[in-house]
Amino acid sequence: MRDNGSFDSHPSFGSGFFPGVSRETPGTSTVSGGGGLYDVYGGRGGLGFGFTAKPASIPGPRAMAGAGSASDPNSGMPVYEGSGGPNTIVSAAGHRGKAAEMDSVRQSREAEDPPLAQEARRAVQILNPSGEIQMPRPPRMRVFCVSNQKGGVGKTTSVVNIAVALALHGNRVLVIDLDPQGNASTGLDVPHHAAIPDVYDCLVADTPISDVVQAVQGIPNLFCVPATIDLAGAEIELVSMVARESRLARALEGHRGEYDYIFIDCPPSLGLLTVNALVASQEVMIPIQCEYYALEGVQQLTNNIQLVKNHLNPPLEVTTVLLTMYDRRTRLADAVEQDVRAHFGDRVLTAVIPRNVRVSEAPSYGQSVMTYDPGSRGATSYFEAALEIAMRGAHVRAAG
Image (cartoon, rainbow, N blue to C red; front, top):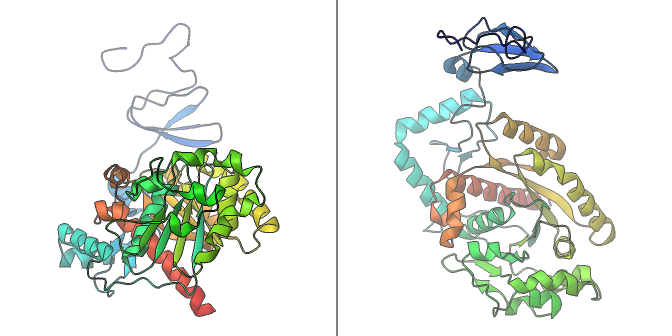
């Protein structure tokens, strides 16, 4: 390297380290080659084999922000309307790309309250200590199977937080932990050690659900059927049983109408436990992480759901798709969201769950993010999702 920062020619590479790359223009360059154009930031010239570098100008932050770029730091944040009345929420995903509407909402809010006051207002709305805010109750019990064979996409986190949000706003909710890891039980702070009666007893020993249900401390109207390590062997024991696919459905038959919502948290697989959950449910919720790998298994999952619908449970439908772990700083997250919305249509919730450290911290304290940090973006987004699910149920009632 010379003193002025340029590279000397290398005898084995001709004019430079990378043949075909021009290095005359310092700063940034646009490299063309292969399938398209690529912006290369930093360094002196582009780095690549067989590409041709051309001088180009990169728009500055103000120009990018003015163009409605996805890198807008506020584009993924839920905003509450100041003059829209109680419980009026501007969804981050629903208003993404509508810069004029978002700006007007932000200006009205900024003129009224400082950020801490806005966060406190959201926390009070989510915790609902007075019980005044009520989400509409469905006309009949809704049973959700929350499934995705890929692990780590937010199934358990979504079950716990949506269930808590619904229970805090006037609905009776039951969470069935059907995952041998027992993470939903941990998130709700429900005991699930080996001596505790659990969902395994309902599947294998025909124990009534009422004998294993536990009330969740601190959350009225929320109940949980825990999972212990015994559930790990249930799939093997179910193989030789009569009507092995409908054991959970039979256990729930005596509780129709006792709850407004039942959420079944499934393991990350398509085995007999998941099939039992699909047969016992009327609706399927699919959490999809905003990453490429999360999309690969969705087709296989929907195929299995269709098989269960055709042969075991005709009323079963995929009614809800929830996008999780959305990182507004990446273009990949926007691309995944567009693909999912194009495939599933209006079954995808408008609410999108962002990456938020509070959501990850809450289980270590045996809490949901709704009670751990109700003013956080994670809590606000899950509140939006729960409200949207409740409103969809109300629209079904109105249509019926």
